[in-house]
Image 1 (cartoon, helix red, strand yellow):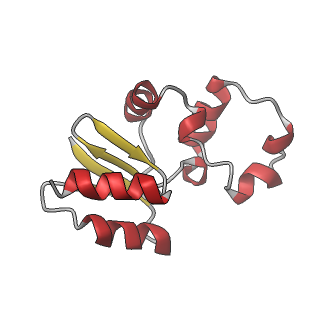
Image 2 (tube, rainbow, N blue to C red):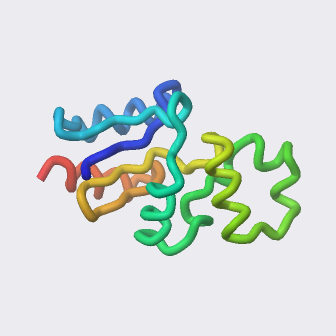
Length: 117
């Protein structure tokens, strides 16, 4: 599977998509228009080790909902990501068995190398 879960209204995600220059064999999914499904989220969790690693604590709702003051469990992280796209770290970039999560420079460089090799 070659797929990138992104947010089309995010300038950082747009820049990353341009850097990756994904071919027609890569499926793009705007997480605001179509959220992530539970099966894919579970698969990603198995790849990275936890739901927390997929969760964006930078989301405005993280603080406004008071989640930053709570001791969230793995089940909580999963529930919030399935309910609200804003809690997903983005982009999620899947190139067969390789998974790249987020927009950190090293992550993006690794994804670009993977998709363009």
